[in-house]
Amino acid sequence: MSIDGPIGSGKSSVAFELARLLGRTCISTGMMYRAVALIVRDGRPYDRASFACEVARVSHFEFTSRPDSLRICVDGTDVTDEVSDPSILPLTSEIAQHPGLRTALLRCQREMALREPSVIEGRDANTQIVPTARWKFYLDAPPEVRYRRLHDVHKLSAISPLEYAEFVRTMELVDERDRGRLRESSRQADVIHHENFAHLSALQDAVILYYYIFRSEEIRRNASISRTISAPTAKS
Image 1 (tube, rainbow, N blue to C red):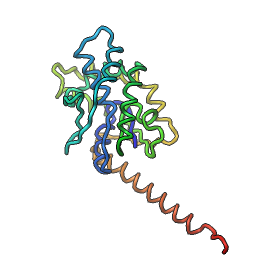
Image 2: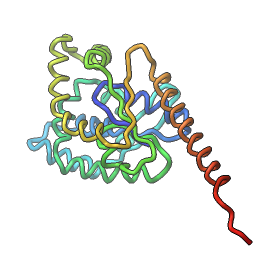
Image 3: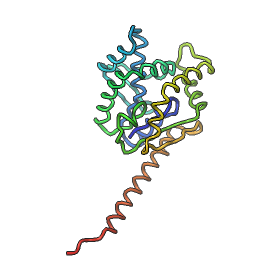
Image 4: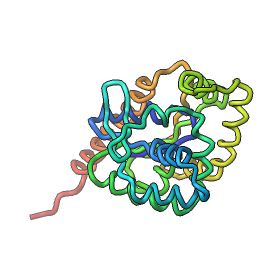
């Protein structure tokens, strides 16, 4: 099961709640990219793209679920709080354009997805990691909702928070970089679209998706039973 969408659309929170409802592991590709960006930023290498590829290739990523949040560890160190700051997003978007980094992380993400039933959210989830997933969702929200939500997080986590107008300009650049990738993800024929508005909580959105899955499976089972009953029996 996979979920994609633009930054701030709520896909991480909804995926976490949906995974809890389904009893599955939650994997956030966005958190993995941001973790790599964090290491690149702190390391200040001369060639950021090559350094990012090497970090992705040799690092061990692990997700754990707490009652109220999804946590990510890199080589045993919990970096959840650091990667939650939206100020890391521009660098994340920049290095994510490098094919070598995407190849390295895709290999890791596919291995994690095959290990156990999971809900995977974020970059490449619908198109590359699990393109044959039974359920693929695309979450979206109006830009003003997404930017305001991200800025609220940014103000709490950043050492020197940006003013809202400057923050919006930064996020618009990220949106522009991601536009082609998101267009490909959202236009797949088997992707289910869901609009995420500010008045709904992540749990409420997850319940909507859960109900859709439950009802669709119920309809599928009933149709299968109906075909079995109506099928002509062979004469003895």
